[in-house]
Image (cartoon, rainbow, N blue to C red; front, side, top):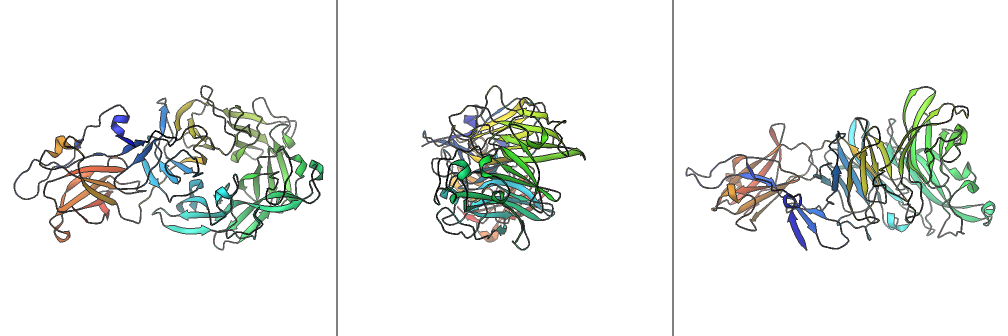
Length: 537
């Protein structure tokens, strides 16, 4: 396995910057306390994408291959929920928070994570993601799942697991502990959560050439009261929509392989209504609390809204979202328009937005607002994907089962793009760029080791008398400015040696010769907020 420092990989040498010099005892020494970013990039020459590695943490996020034009980007951090541990092309499958200039902020628990993002539960800023449980994990049935949604607070404490229990049936004929599906997990202003759920059901498939007692997936929209975990709204498309409207090819089905005719993949609450998206019908529905369909838009013929404008058609789409209502009689509706359902197709996936007249009026058909895609390097995503507006007028697109992320300017120009795995390998169901501030409840991590060579990056300020190096990181901390370094003969005799600036996720710093024990304290807003364990050298 080959490793190299991020400074060399980026084609420049990071010059160590002395931050504060102190000595132990009355006599001056040659040792100077200084610090640098100690990130290592690892490439083992296989299908595993280059990843970041550290001495004080076992988190191994992908190293994003980034291109940017220099145009203004939105502020915020990237939320990437890695999926598919088998053949994923990444070193570690986990949720990651990463800056748009490639600095790791947080690496979450190892395992599948879907729809990883920041949300508000009331006034509390939290992070959420779906994870599979037991035998009903994500890989049990590709494209669907049975599990729970985990909610963490801004200290990374797991404060709630949302476990929907509707006694749903998997294709195996068994029920599960928790029934929430991978696709949706949105907290509403009413302190409820919207989730999708999939049930194996029987239905009349004679209109498709199948039996009257065929087997299908009934993809269900559920709203859960977060105080009680009880559902307050349930909507089944099987009870309201004809199965023969599907665009998904019917080739037969049975209980262990149900026909996924509808494939619900997003839900949004809008007042007392619910916006529900069907990938396989190429339609998005507005449903009232009584379960009645108020209107629908079809990606090909417009449905209730009249003809779709040129370049505004969509199919196999994800993440239907009402974006804003500038007046009471119109609305902006956006999708990540996959526009393909097979990996062999080459149609570019787009960020499509249509302006709709309300109530629907065929005489006032939809108006195209955006059809964003990278004309120079188009991406064709057969599954998953996200299209989200950013605070500065830009938009972010995550390409689902293709390992690409792109930030577009208001006019559709690509201002920033990144790749985190080889094509057709890495995937993240959705990608978000959001503001997030956190102070972990656990301690910073500290490791002390001997420099690997006499000419390491800190030797010019550490001098030849000491090759001791400290490595400190605090997984998830967003507001650390500096670290206070304490040294001594024993834990009871620790004294401050000085401060070092935080340098990336993991900071490497020099230590004077003769150091016996070391501790660091994370400095935020000018004060130490939490200390590491004491490390004996």
